[in-house]
Image (cartoon, rainbow, N blue to C red; front, side, top):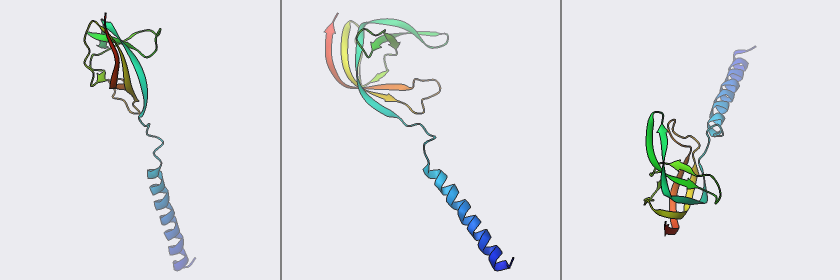
Amino acid sequence: MSTNKRFQVISYLFILCIMMSLSSCFNDDNNPKDWTETVNLYVSSETASFKPLEGIEGEGMKIKEKEGAAWTVVAFSTISEFTYKKGYNYLLETEKTHLGNPPADGSNISYKLIKIISKEAH
């Protein structure tokens, strides 16, 4: 094989390798994406105890997405831009974000208050 042909083959292989390397940068399917939806949340007038971390017990608010569903106890700071007041039942419109890459010590879901639909003293 002549030197000129050998140089062309090596050049083609080099260009092919570069193109394959660059094309892998455009494929972002391996990184899960955050996605959001609008959900209504029921917030109970009563609080409950829960364990955010092993060995640590705290008080939290009770929430659920559907009437008749079981209550889930979460930290008071779970719904950003919402200030919980004990003794009131709330119905909230929230933006629920499903985190593609959640923190190792946190939830894979976050909530943000859009508006308070109702607030009733219990």
